Length: 335
Ligand code: ACO
Image (cartoon, rainbow, N blue to C red; front, side):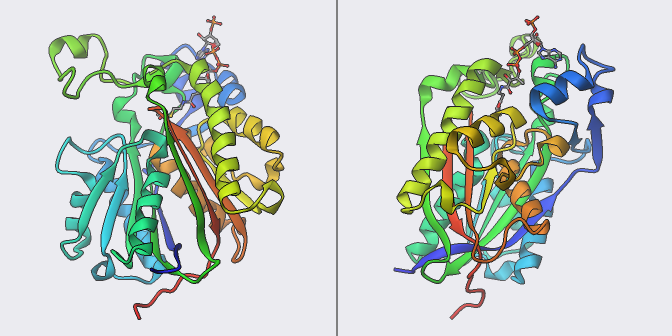
């Protein structure tokens, strides 16, 4: 059995179009002040009409491979976390496998809403530790703008489009991922869902008339769950690594709402300065939120070799996930 796995490259893809709160306030009954004070969001990215999630995933994957110094031929497994695949099938992982020109490797999409990227990291870690794979590409990519009801002020101010990616390789003992915790509770399913477009309610004129192909959310219920889930998941991942809040150097939380992050920081007793926040620029980008935040935290010098980090997220399902990582120490070359 291998010792562990770690991240050796990160990438990000940002659609060019920036939609500000002021612009939104011209189309729905809201204000920049309301959105900033309730969510922390100032602007979000919107994919171009010809762009789909696989385009965002591909852009992020290319950069992650470049920063890792790894060619597509070295990839053994591709995992894509997304709630907004280009189509029901083929999956996004196959779409980017073709464009990257990798070997005919395993291609898997993970569907756990905003928790999908951390779920994907966990699958990748397992594949590396078991010896099934040496180099795994994990991507989170979303075009939430395509399932957003732009006339519903309660949801349309929250979301955005982005892609983020990480390349995982084996690590020396004590470096890289130290623990993972994954959770799910289907009792929360009604609070956050897209009702139609699947096998229970296939697309029809009626489902479209009722707006059932959009995100439907009970905001306050999700809010309460989110704070609890972030705290419990982060605390459990730390416990499983025999660590405590005082050991943490940086936290990459799911970027859904600044108030959720601040509440979680207070409850976890980890100073807010250790939490990386970019929700103001992108809104909630679901599966892309953690890899894009991690990319920017690393670029800003908030994530340093030897530092202990926690990645923690929650999403529809309900789902939640967290992991701890000792940054650095990747073994880049095949033995
Ligand atoms: N502009 C102005 N007013 C608004 C807006 C808006 N954009 N949206 C709602 N309001 C109004 C409501 O109608 C309500 O008015 P009323 O009191 O007259 O009825 C009032 O503001 C307060 O609404 P609340 O829903 O109580 O506002 P709250 O402070 O709870 O904030 C929010 C709402 C931001 C949605 C919050 O509940 C939240 O962040 N929830 C969690 C959302 C989340 O994290 N989702 C994760 C999605 S993850 C995934 O898997 C896709």
